[in-house]
Every structure is written in C-alpha cells, then in structure tokens.
Image (cartoon, rainbow, N blue to C red; front, side, top):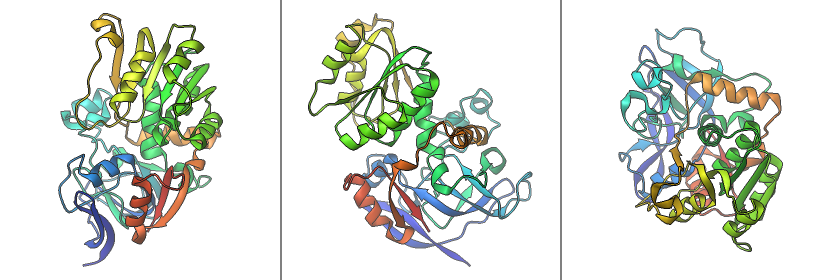
Length: 351
C-alpha cells in the first residue's frame, strides 16, 4: 500500500509527522495531491487541546492541489486538474445546504467543517475531498498557489464577516484584531462599500498591511484607548458594524461598546471558555443591537467567486504569506505560528 507523509494530532501540544496510507476515493469523492496548504488559528486551538478532535487525526483544512484520483460518480473534472477546496465541504443536498447555510451541512453546528475536524485533513501529501462535485473549484492558470491559498478559509471567513454584518455603502466599520481573518474582514468591508474603516491591533506591521487592504484609520491599542478614539471619530455615535476577529472576551466586549444603538456585531473569533454579555453595553437587551456569528462559507461556487475577486486585482492577499516551510518541518512551523514570532501572519506549507 502506498503511503504519504501527514501531520497528525496526538494529544495537547503534540503533533508529529507520520506515514499514512494514501486515501482511496469513494464514488463521490476525489483525492488531491496537495501542492500548498497552510496553518490556521483554529489548528492552533486544536494543537493546544482547546478544540477537541480525535487523537490520530490528520489536521488542516486549506488545500490547494491537483486531482490525483476521482470517484466514478464525479463528473466535470479530470485527473491532473489544478483545484482548490474550501475549508467547509458541504454535501450540497441536505436542508441547510439547500437553504444556503452550507457551513451547517447536515443540520449539525459546524457540520460542514469536516477536513481536519471530523475527517482527515490536508496537512499531508494527499487529502480526500468528500462530495467532490460540490466542492472542487478549478484554479485559473494565471493564478499561483499562494494567490489562492487564502480562499479556502480566511478570505471566505473574513469576507463572510463583512457580508453577515450587512455593511452598507457609507457605513463606518471597526474591525478588532488584524490577524489574517481580521485583515480579510478589512478587505471585505472595503468591497462591501464601507467608507470609513477603523482597525485596531497592537502590531504596527499588521496595521500597515491593513491600510493597503482598505483601512482608513488605524488604532494601536498599546498607545491609544480604542473606544475613546472610536467615539471621538464618530462624534459619540458609535459604528454601524463592529467585526470581532480574535475570539476573546475583551475584543467581543469592545465591539459591543463601539456599536451605535441598532448596530451589528459580526463575530468571527473562535472562543474558548465562557463569553459574558455586559448588560450596559447592550442597553439591558433593549438597544436593538444585532449579534451574528459566521462560520467560513464553503462550496465550489463560493470558492469560484473568491478567486474571481483575486483575479480581478481588487484584493491582493499574497503579503500575508510571511513564511514558508516544507511539510516535513511543520512542527517547527506550528511552533513559530502558535507563538507569533518573527512577524508571522501565514505560513505556506509545501509537501
């Protein structure tokens, strides 16, 4: 039996490279030879044991690759074709999928997130993609792996936060945290028509990238009080939409306090532990605030649309790839990424 290298989660704090069998597709599946993938903040939660997965699982959920094998029921694709698949791999047939909520496929919370969660993921030389016809999107020859590497997860998630927030032309928006998800939310807010985009972070380099992606005003929380600044900028009114892109009590609460009455908090962070709701910040529940959460939209049409945005030149996210590692060195990549050293934003992993 042919084998491959794969990054396997064993226990909190422990990931190692193992030899695993190359997967075989069922009738509706495809197997990709992974050409580029990356590490997500959610993978770090898995590494630390903050998000539970089964020991022995191959992790990772952001694949760019080439079709190596196709199930006999998959039509419209061919072996050797260059493709991506979203982090969310919906079936395209269940009620949530047909209702347009592909990330909740199967009617279970987060049911569409299978790769590196409930089935083996893509931090490996090969990965099986379920329901391939609903999830594989061809990559144009004009686009490199690194140009489309953000599409499967962080671009879809960040843009999804802007979309779910209902941003309108002329809105004032604040995004708390300018990691990869927050930077994509900044770019998404610009595309949605926000005309005053405020971003908050404590890393100067990230604030500079945010400017290039559409931020109008940057606030470094290490030297300024974000809420004081936001209220001064908005003449005390608050923002129309606040996007939380980190997953902490402090940033969640700051988003609430930055909102105008009737404003929307769009939550993208992955929270661990309890999340409290301060009564004054939501006017005891009577301030007409809206709180909405978003899990990365998936499926081949979503991926096609995101690649169209990249191909148009309206958004260039390649600056986010700050480090590159071989799959064999992924433990070192996790160490760098999880400790946020050396200005890391995203790492490209190549088998």
